[in-house]
Length: 362
Image (cartoon, rainbow, N blue to C red; front, side):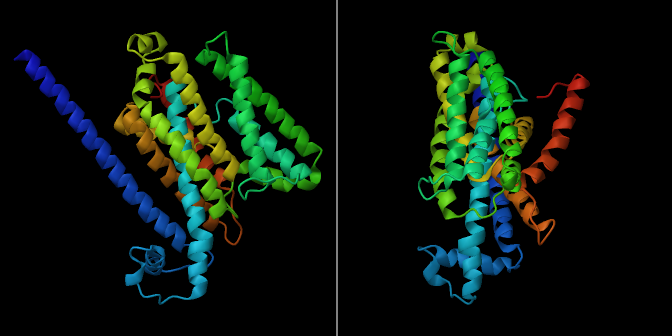
């Protein structure tokens, strides 16, 4: 009887967790849909939300036949060619950073880790700065030199950090963290050197470093989506292993986790997500730090819930931030990284203050 009662309690808790996960995903999904629709409607040429919804419905092959096109051709171009790909890209980048942030925090067992902790952003920044300064005639999949160079710089940085941190066949997490910080500082210094010797490109480099979705379109979205799908699928598949790693590497090994192999896969998947995000829109800070924290406080540390909810939370945050970036100082536009910093920095300071009071930062 006691065994049956314990089993029933565990089953009940599991059902409650699944229900809570479903509610969180449903609420965030609805908020993301509404926020995305509003973001497409608002801009220098304001459009009625109902008209935007009809334009989007008309573009869908399975429902478009039932919608009468009573809008101007210019409004359709604004929605489908300009605003929709930008909003979708903001959602994809935000989701990628949210998932990568949750994975890195689990991998390093450090709630202050973010997607850029191992120097990915510094490597991408150096690659993009060199491309802006020297304008090489390269491209890939319809993208110009800057995103291609940024992605290459990010991936090369991850490989270098991994090589430096490796001890024999093992890669201690502490070594990864310290190597990333050291190499990231070096690459940031090299970015400063490029800026000093490329004064004619100063504005472009600084604007890219601040992060922006301006001028992004369907090509950038098409490149970013596969990385989000593959990287997120891999990390979700390893969610149980991430949960085990929270207990420590020895405990995870006792639970049957192939620790070294799992760490490599998590590092590769999270780094690819981060590299794709940075290459498409520059450095957007705090999304991967703030969103997993908020999700963890609400849903708990289980990565089976944390990662998908962080994806939706990151998407919603960046769509909202980009909307504010486009509209706050019209007709000018703020870099979206500035907006996320204004949102994320106060939360970061709140975490530090909470930690000083002895409450911890989790």
